Image 1 (spheres, rainbow, N blue to C red):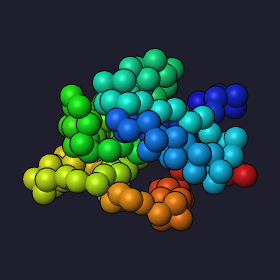
Image 2: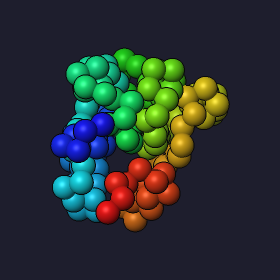
Image 3: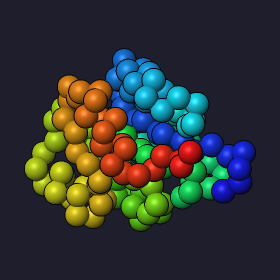
Length: 136
């Protein structure tokens, strides 16, 4: 990754209000160190990832809902793990069936599962634990 390339957070949820909240909370916590992208579906997120020059090294965290139209969050996490294993994955969801959650953890190697409604402090602390922040 070159010096000019910024690291990216990608938030995926079919509710725009959730995406707006996530983007605002992340930007308030991490400032201009990152690019903040949002997608309203896994398919849209995959398009963003495919359009990124080096997604394995520039997209550092994907925060995704589970219950979305089209591809569910567990399938999306598995897709990420198989194609972009360096990306850290957080499943942020209000509802998920136990079998899908188990698949997301085992096959998709989800780093954390956070339930909705989430607490901003918890989300930020989980992201800090992932050690993806650029060193100052």
